[in-house]
Amino acid sequence: MALDIVIMAAGKGTRMKSDRPKVLHRLAGRALLQHVLDTCTALSADRTLVITGYRADAVEQLLQGQPARCLRQEPQLGTGHAVQQALPHLDEDGTTLVLNGDVPLIRADTVRALVDACAGRQLALLTLRLDEPSGYGRVLREGDAVLGIVEHKDATPAQRQVREVYTGVMAAPTAQLKRWVAALRNDNAQREYYLTDIVAMAVADRVPVVAHVVADETEVLGINDAVQLADLERRVQRRQADALMRDGVRLADPERFDLRGELHCGRDVEIDVNCIFEGRVVLGDGVRIGANCVIRNTTIGAGAEILPFTHFTDATIGAGAQVGPFARLRPGADLGPEVHIGNFVEVKNSTLARGAKANHLAYLGDATVGERVNYGAGSITANYDGANKHRTVIGADVHVGSNCVLVAPVTVGDGATIGAGSTVGKPAPAGQLTVARARQVSISGWTRPVKKKP
Ligand code: UD1
Ligand code: CA
Image (cartoon, rainbow, N blue to C red; front, side):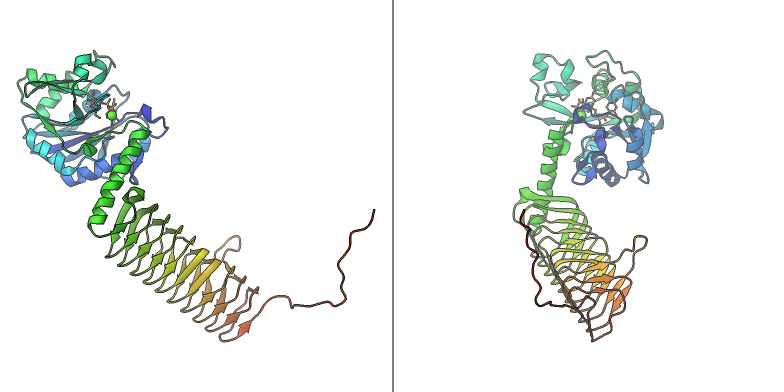
C-alpha cells in the first residue's frame, strides 16, 4: 500500500518573533524541517510533500536536491487548509502520514508504529499526556473511545482540564482523508480550517479512531518560541551526550557539551567543558580536548592533545600532536604526527611534517613545512601580494628565528637557519645561516635630547 507524507511548514511562527521562517531555525546544527525530512528518509515513503507558505522561497531552497516536493499554500488558512493543498497529489489507495515541520525530534519507529496502527483503514493519532497542556489541542474521549480534538482556543474550561493532547502527527486512510479535509469549515475561534476537525468526522463515519500515547515527550515537543527552541536544544544535546558516554567517551560535563553534526570517537577520548563540535569530527583513541574548543569538520589522530580555547575548521591533526591553548587552524591546515602548535598561532592551507613546531604568536599560510622545523615566535608567511596567494616551502630541520617575515613565493632549504628579525624574499640555501636585516650599530658619545627650559 502506498505511503505518502505531508509535512506542514507554511506557518510563519509568529511567536518566534523572527524574520526567519520557523522551520528553518536550527536545532543541533540542522534546520527543524531537516530533522523531519531525515526521519522521513528512514520511512521510504512513496511521496514526501512539504507545504510551504511564509517565505516559501527560503524553505524551498533548503529542499533543493532532496527527495521532497514543495506545494505552496497561499494564504495560510490553517492546518486543514495546508493538507488541502496536497490532496490532488495523494495516492487514493494508500495511507497518508501528516507531520508538523516544527516537531523535529519525532522518531521513525514511532511514526512507523502509527502507520501500522492506521492499517490503511483507521485514523491513528499520536497523543501525549502533559502536566502543562496549555496551547495544545485536547483529545476528547468517552471512556476509551476518542470523540474528537478541540483546540485550546475553542475549548471550554472543563475541556482545558484534559491532559491528553494531540501532537500534530496522524496517519489516515487517504481516500477518507480526502473526503474529510475537503469538507472542513472554519467556524471556530481562529477562523482557520483545523485538520483536527477530521477526527469528529471519522467518528461520525464510524471509522475507528485510535490514539497512540507517546512515551517520550521530547519526541513530540513542538517549537513555538525561542524558549522552547533552547529547551529542546538542551534535550537533544543531552541525548547525544548520553549516547557518546555510553560508548565510553568521557565528557567532563554533559550539560556543557554541544554537538551540531556527527562526532566519531575512538577509545579513551576525554572532552572538557564547553566544547562545540560541528559538521563531521573524528577523534582517534586517547584524544584529549581541553575546555572551550570549537572544532568543525576536523580529524584528530590518536593521542593528540588539544589545549583550551582552540578553534579548528576543516583541519587534520596527526597522532600525538599538541595544539593550543588559543590556536587557530583554518581550512587546509594539515598537521603531521607530533607537531606542536602553541598559543596565538594561526595555520591555513599548510602542511606541517612530523615533529614540526610553531609554539608562539605565528602565522603559517600556504606553506609546506618539513620535519622537525622550529618556527620562531612572531614569524609569519607573507603569502598574499594583494592580488594572489603564493607558497612558502620550508625544508626539513630548518630553524626560523623569531619575528621573521617569509615573503612568498620563497623557499628555505633543508637545515637552513634564518636569523631573527629577517625579511626573506629570495631562496635561503640549505645548511646556511641567512640573515636579512640592518646591521646593529652602536654610537659612542651619543646623548639623549633634553627638554628646553621655557
Ligand atoms: C497544532 C494542532 C494542535 C496540536 C499542535 C501540536 C491544529 C488545528 N492544531 O496546533 O491540535 O496540539 O499542533 O503541536 O492542527 N501550518 C501550515 N499552514 C497553516 C497553518 C499551519 O502549514 O495554514 C503548519 C505550521 O507551519 C506548523 C504546523 O502547521 O508546522 C502546525 O501549525 P501551528 O500553527 O503551530 O499549530 P498549533 O497551533 O501548534
Ligand atoms: Ca505548533
